[in-house]
Length: 276
Image 1: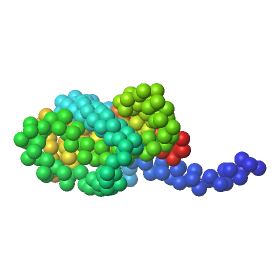
Image 2: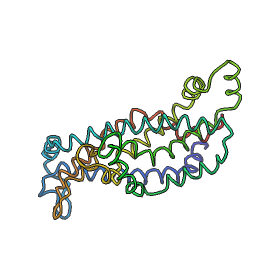
Image 3: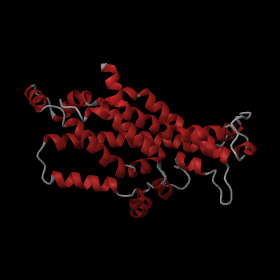
Image 4: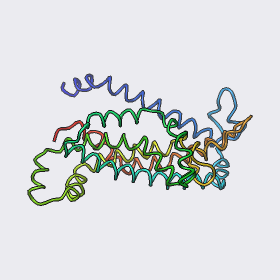
């Protein structure tokens, strides 16, 4: 009786979740099927579900030197970007939690505003600055520019996790002689590690998929994976096989990243809703 009642009670949630899964996975499945079809089979109407799969599109994409360069560029840029955002955000979130800072509320509101602004809005003024400083078309320069979006998000996330840690833990650490730096890496980081991992993954997914900033601040050396996929879009035609195959290959690192850290993602996304 209890199980039956529980199922009826949660059925709407299950139904919505099932529909969401269908809507999010169906495009990926459709792209994958196009990537293993010949050009003739890709454009048949109605679509053919019985066909001889091929791997030509994947072979062509993997052998494409520009695509390989953009793939490894994105790995490097994303690693730089995640490291910068998490390290800076941890110290900023700790300061916002631990100390009485003037205009703290205004500062948090400004971070939220900066997070909501379009990324490309910052590219135009930074273009000349990057040219002068030698950061234009560099991996570090692009990762640094990504902080405009990633850092406000990271500070908001990590501050909410730190706020769940009871103040008594701070007091006990201070009595034991912990410095602020020791308190961060010995106490806070282990306690909010799931939240840190969840924040890092969400930032990584955004950086991996970002396009607008990359178009404005790269030329040849630091093109990310999004431009590697976009190369198959011509002026008058599109190489659908190359575009779909490169899209699937571009998904692999993020899927692997999420699967490996899935446990921490779930804990991290629920950490802020639980009281310590």
